[in-house]
Length: 251
Ligand SMILES: Nc1ncnc2c1ncn2[C@@H]1O[C@H](COP(=O)(O)OP(=O)(O)O)[C@@H](O)[C@H]1O
Ligand SMILES: [Mg+2]
Image (cartoon, rainbow, N blue to C red; front, top):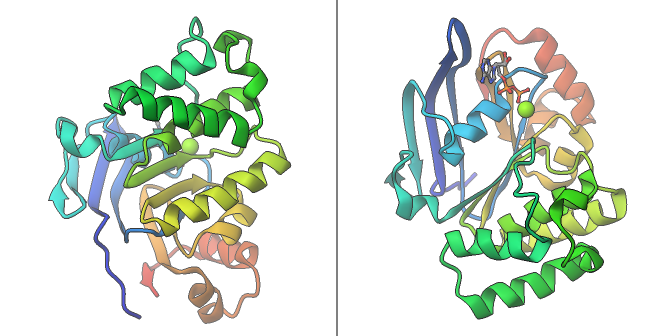
């Protein structure tokens, strides 16, 4: 299959916390416009991988390339093309939702008129317009998540990193989010999802990687992987893969 890695190349990424090796050599790649699911059990290293990509953690080893350029934490120009939705929301609680979004977009140097336009769109699209002028401290978990997702999408990143973004979102808004994500990807944004919700991965991801114990043990085209494994569902494939987890494979 013709495949252009292009947007993100992660090679042999390593990260330890004291004696604990969280990432033991994580490798995978994303093409522009691709929605890629990083799946794996709790503690496998998904969040750590995304934090390194977001520039929040320094890796101990390995290499990263974004849009063909070597990427590191101080590469501010490249960082402007990356947006990150953390699994543990970090928010400024004394700002209103709109101020928060405005502030975030300002960090990415989005012009004022454009910020207004984005706020108009996302507060409406994710159905939390009535919280636009409310302090973030009064938001429910789901509304906080909507704000984080809106901000990240509003900067129109070339690479979007999502860590369990749908955990506190209700299914109706979740559905709109998935639709919007497909549109964003169709315009060229590469989307990296970390999730343990297999149905979500099955719905939106074309390619997946399964990370277990700090290593990507299988990656490839989702439909092809399931065919090869003779499995009709991602759930069966996932359990078989994680339980066996002996030798790496590529499809
Ligand atoms: N700040 C930290 N200090 C020590 N250990 C950590 C820290 N962050 C993550 N870990 C450990 O690294 C491993 C990978 O964690 P994480 O990337 O959060 O996994 P996942 O997101 O796949 O559930 C786990 O064993 C976790 O306990
Ligand atoms: Mg995690």
